[in-house]
Length: 456
Ligand SMILES: *Cc1c(COP(=O)(O)O)cnc(C)c1O
Image (cartoon, rainbow, N blue to C red; front, side, top):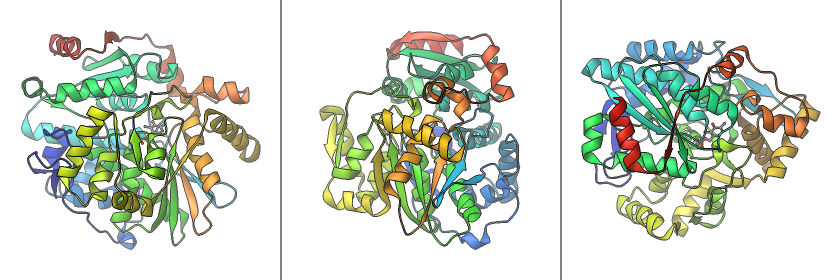
């Protein structure tokens, strides 16, 4: 499979190169030249990693053969407590909860990050090369990346997180890991500031080449590819003809993977984009208005995002893969802090996506409702998705809501609403006792460059 940039001005790459490159040199995002089709009836019956291998092979094929990929998926997903890495829980009224939070850092980010780390190791081992991973996190990506790469022989990991905008548990999960190659950095700014710092360093050709910079944010195609898998496996567990998904959405990576699954042949009726009060995607899908507002801090911090990076991939599709138009829109986003999606493109998006926004009140009420009615404690992100599923309530299909984080990651928010604390898994208890180590910094790319150079 070959990979092209949404902005049309970067080299065409194979999987291995796209994996190591992350953000394209023209500022765009890589995606496959075409969407492979798979036959759902041919997905192997056995373990999660066997299914993952089958589903991902068309994307990875020119880099690894089936046996090689199987080795990596097996290694990655053996970090989950059971062979069913992503169990499906039946709720009332044709609703289902896909539990994606049983991995080592208790959020769905583990699915992509654990495999990404294995893929990176394989590629770097082959090349005999070392890289510098630079990533921004709104909370869960950072800990998943640190956990997945902490024993890497080939990568140093620098993770930026916004001061005061991640939960204490999320921060501790990043800052208490002892590893010589891990550097968490607290930035005095928002998640978007962190993401912009990452982008600006990637655009400095000299620095990028000197340090072999690599990206593990969901701009990296490898992450999207890994997330396609559980859409297929949950559909199989559901055992119905057709399905819809409700996805708590921030950077549009997870839900984009669902859209790709549909392109690959999974019978998905609708994908519900569930946002919190940072509702740029809700506005965009309802009316075509993609304009930046100030980031609001909510109790679902991993979705406190305005610029939704992966939406560029969706726009690329909706604009008939016209990279000139995408480049114009992205320039407009920088100069005018927003743009309007043209009608034909918006209609294309609306064929597959419905959107919904949960206020803080909606999210809290949903946590209470599920505690009372289903006797389960859900985390605030998962609540945003379940709220949207309830509001929209499709008649024609069951809705699977993606449970994106374990409530133990957000104990304060849960206690505030329910007056009970979620049970804290043992591994997390240990991490909460550890000593914290991290750097703090203003949002200045020069400080960041210096810090990275000093520590390599
Ligand atoms: C990252 C994250 C999301 C949002 O996923 P995107 O791929 O950025 O849309 C939702 N919930 C949790 C818990 C997350 O960590």
